[in-house]
Image 1 (cartoon, rainbow, N blue to C red):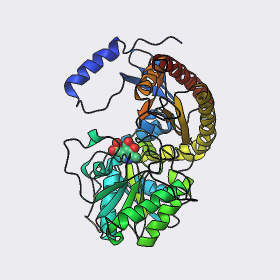
Image 2: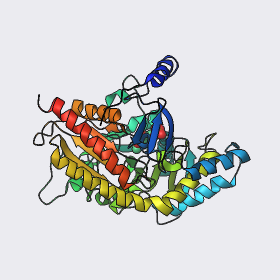
Image 3: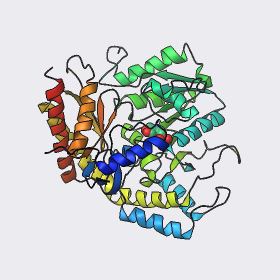
Image 4: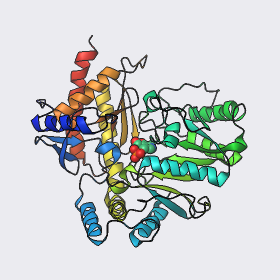
Length: 442
Ligand SMILES: Cc1ncc(COP(=O)(O)O)c(C=O)c1O
């Protein structure tokens, strides 16, 4: 494989113009300038083709510009583009009905539509306070919940998200996320690591720091995304649910990245056998149209008229795109994710056997993390090597994104085929081999 010379002249020119007029705060990693896409393939403005194993950070759920999503957007745009959320329209109701059908609650579910993940999280925090009349929350180290003032108070994956933005929202305490590869708490004899984390919360936080009857909720990603695609051990969520039930605390699952079929179930929390009380969604919910939702049990959505709202909530074009997306996931992609996800995990485990820089491969469905280490014994994170793999993969024709300290996330569209996994992983392995030559032999 011959690496591409990137960025090409057209990409370079656009990046120069971008620098002059677009906020420099966006965390661009490498110079990909999109021209168009189809399924899992994308092309840049110089005509170079790439496989997209990032899907716009797990957003292009049905692949790029799926014809049925495009048709739904076009049809709705011709009918009407906007009517304020002070009025009603049917496509919004239809989406609410569909979300009620697929929500991970045994009883009826009600949705508040938003425009992004962070806005879904804001809505969840506000509702939890309103409903419980309690003010305190527990979040998890390594978490990412967004960047608006409430959500960023829970985000704890990198200090730069908070630097010079203090003070944060008050009432948020962070505890360790149950990371089986890098545990930080001691287990008692016979105790699972998930149980140990929950015991720590009860013994050290509730018994010393926050009275349990002032704790409104836990905000947690069922699989930590930006923090490193970390899958908690199976004993964690049942123990956390039990703790919530004991003290009347709400369990808020942030499914912005892990939801909408990415793990082969509608919601990642369903892999752990517990019901949350509130979930937040966005990213893949409308295949890339800006839409989010905060979904909860009917009895929890107890706030009155006027207490929360927004202008664009229930945008008809986003709702139409979402209905088409959900239909495609239901009919084709849930099953595809299960099959292709398992296939990709197997293939990556084989790649791990050939490459000592890979310390761990983990994930469910098409939410897979590959963690790079300097040495499998010490598990020291191989940050430079990981960055090199991401950059080399790009030059060889594969889009990936890092997460955590030294992890690469594999989160392609849910429509990705086994053939595309083969092609992408061939590039991935070549990039790893080249990066290992540079970093492991020194
Ligand atoms: C779990 C999770 N929650 C919230 C957000 C914030 O979403 P947005 O960027 O749409 O505001 C993200 C974004 O990466 C996320 O991964």
